[in-house]
Image (tube, rainbow, N blue to C red):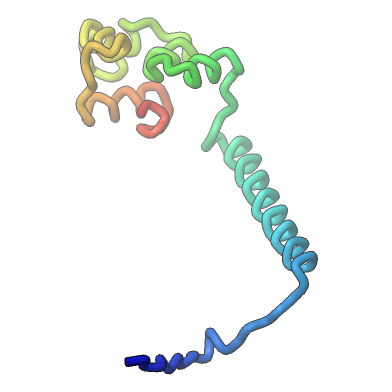
Length: 125
């Protein structure tokens, strides 16, 4: 049996506009440019307010290479293992194990390290 299906269009679907591909592409490009400009403005605002920071290339390269973020940010801040351990209230031995990947830090420890390094928890993940 061949049953025909009846399609009912609601108001939103029946409001269709057809435009040439070139015009659609131009509108899409303009929307992306506006979104990029807004992201740029947010980044500038966050830098100016201190909510975000620029990381020197050397440290960014280390993060991209997969080096432990705790170690990279500790070095960026000019801290020793002992001083960071003191600020984060963890033992230097435990911190060293986290940095070398021998142990994972607990959520509480990682939050303390993030606060001591003035970064977000996501920065250390």
